[in-house]
Length: 134
Image (cartoon, rainbow, N blue to C red):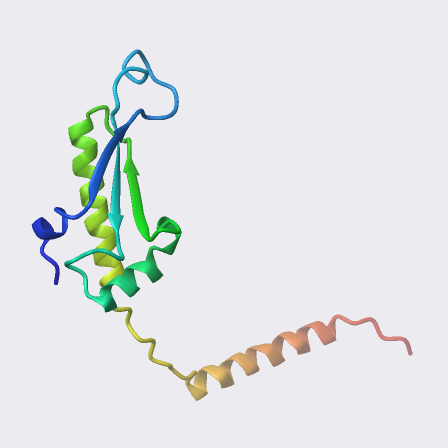
């Protein structure tokens, strides 16, 4: 598994102004932090891990193969940087996680019989409601 401290040395960070409404702070201070991680040129990831990241996070990776994550939840740039690093590491962990293989199950015979019996009873009730011409 990848060490958190080692993987967090590879991405680059950029601080930009946050979007949306705000007070005097939003127009002056660059609090939104963007993380850029070049998946193709990573030294710590194996080719298999790179493929998993590209497959799992394809909607966050641009045409140059750079993963981009941004965070503007907090009013503090330092807090947003910490949040974006945590989010990045969580995304990597979910990309590497193996999915459980689904075990096919079969419907028990008694369940099928019961379903058909109830279905037949409902049909008889509805058939009894029909108006008959004689």
